[in-house]
Length: 336
Image 1 (cartoon, rainbow, N blue to C red):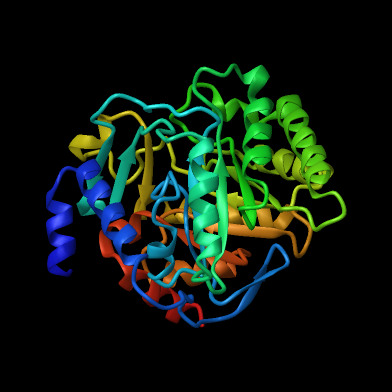
Image 2 (image 1 turned 135 degrees about the vertical axis):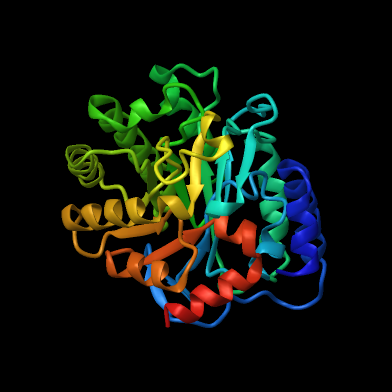
C-alpha cells in the first residue's frame, strides 16, 4: 500500500473520498491524451473496449473527475448516480469501512448535485479530446421524494438532460438506500418503467444510433426474480444488465461491529453471490446481450470467474477504494 493510500484510509471515509476526488480532478489537468490500459479488447453495447475493466457508479457521483479516473486505466467509467434534483442524501455517518473483509457498508442515499450540473462537466470532458477510447456511462436514479408511481418521469428527465453526453445510460433500480426503489425491479412496475424508457430512447435517437440502456439489479434476487427480470428486459428491448448492486445480507461479516449498520454491503464478501447472479442472468438472457459483472471483485481469480460466468466486462468499486489504480492494472492483466 502506498503512503498516499495509507493516509486516505486513515481518514474518515467521506473525507477520504472528497480528497481522492480532488486529487483525481487535479490529475485531469496533466497534459496528454488518456487511454485505457491495453488488455483483452472486447465489445460492449456494440462499442469497442480496450480492456474489460470498468469503474462502477458511486465514486464520481457528480462527474467531477472523469479524466482523472480514466488515467487510472479503466476501459470504461460510469458516473452517478445522478437524480433530476440535487439532494443531500442520508444523514452522516453513512459510509463505513470493514477493512478486515475488504468491504464497505454505505447508506449514502443518492447524494448528488442534480442532473443539471453534469452537461457542462461532461461537455468539457468531451471537448478536451483527452478521453481516448474510454467509454463513459451515466447512472440515473430517482429523487427520494418522488413517488414510485412517478419514478419513470425522473429517469426520463435524466435521459433528456444527458442524451448526447453518455455512451450508455444505466437505470438504477437496485440501491437499497432509497426507500421502495427495489420494488420497481418486479412485475408490472418494471415492465411499465422499462417500456417508457425504451420509447424515449428511440425518440431521442431519431435517425441516429440510440444511446444504449442498461438495467442495474440487486444481488438479493431469487432465481424466479432473475428469470422474470430477464424476460422484461428482453420484452422491452433493453440493451443489457449490470449485476449486481450492494447487498442487504451480512453473510461473512456478521461479527464485525459495523454489521449492524443499515445500508448496502459491497466488497469481497459479495463476490460469490454476484458471480452466481451473473451466471443465472447469462443463462436466461439472449446470447450476446450485454452483461456486466460487478460485486466484490478483488482478485485476479474473481475477475476471471466473473468473465467465465458470462459477463462481457466487469466493474469494480470497493477494491479500487482499498488498492487504488494498481488494482485496475492487476485485473486487466488477469483478464488477458
